[in-house]
Length: 291
Image 1 (cartoon, rainbow, N blue to C red):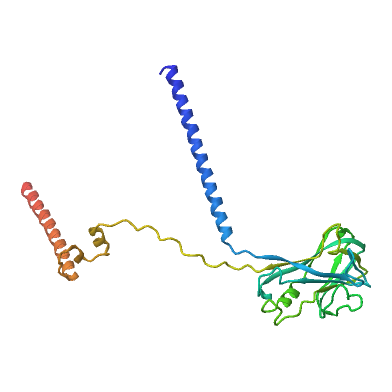
Image 2 (cartoon, helix red, strand yellow):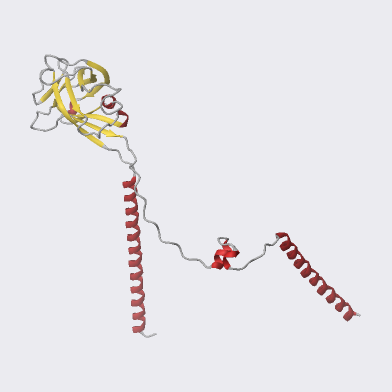
């Protein structure tokens, strides 16, 4: 083989190798894209939990509800009230609530400590809270800790039970409790400030976030009918048992399976007798040659 032919053969092998690598790379890319597409379809088809942020209607401390900060200490409670119907779907029952939390921004921690969270039993407003504070109801959380390093951070409080009671069985409080909001009561020497909705410097007003339990979506419309299958010959249909023999236009008399078995047995017996006869004749011939 000349050097030129060897060179051409090496180049051909190299090109085929490169093409093979390219084909495998394209196949891997195609498989990856199909896998990603199927995963996206599965994720989109899974039931998802809905969430909503309820509107804050009133926030105040023991003094008034017009200041930029809400003071919480031994002599001043903090009161919060939210409107649920503006963000949740109509007639959402309390049983559909998976979790509800109040998110507060800690503007200052003057003294670390803790506070309790109460559900309120009477109505109130920002204008009258100083002269007519609401009455405390059931305790939702006790001993929520507040440390000095939490200043300038958000604090989350679980109020799931209260929101479930406010919604009741019909989304309007039937079988539950009126929505008068919650109160924060300081303990263990706690003294701190939360940002209110009137704080224009940070816009970190209190938030009520509600997460609903996941529900499966409605069943979609049926898909289009698939194409018909391939036609099969009359013989294949007859052999598979799909069409009776009458479909071929031939009258086939009914047969007794016992006759078939008897005929088969007779055939086997005939073959066996024939074999024994051949062996006997061969044996006689051998003896005659020996004599």
